Image (tube, rainbow, N blue to C red; front, side, top):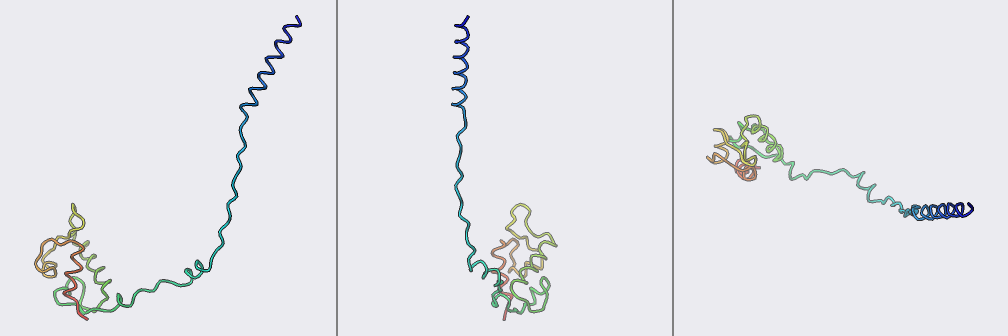
Length: 132
């Protein structure tokens, strides 16, 4: 009978050895250095972006463009905004090709008789109807 006891003890030692092998390794965390706030960030917060005065200069509008945008002198940016309001209000943007604008009778005069104009070409064609 004493032989059986020794055999059971050997089995328990083997189990302990396997437990040691499966122990997880400890991971060390790297320390991350904190970034210092620089004066540049503070300076950016204080200085607000100012619009370029050239964009804010009022332009006189021709008689052909006046029904779309209005007859008062406006900055070029406002003229483009009002033109887009007119285009979207009258649903003149091509539903398939969104960069193209289908001109109605009023816009055909502005675009020089063209029925379809790309949105990039539109600003070029409008510049003919503006004067300082």
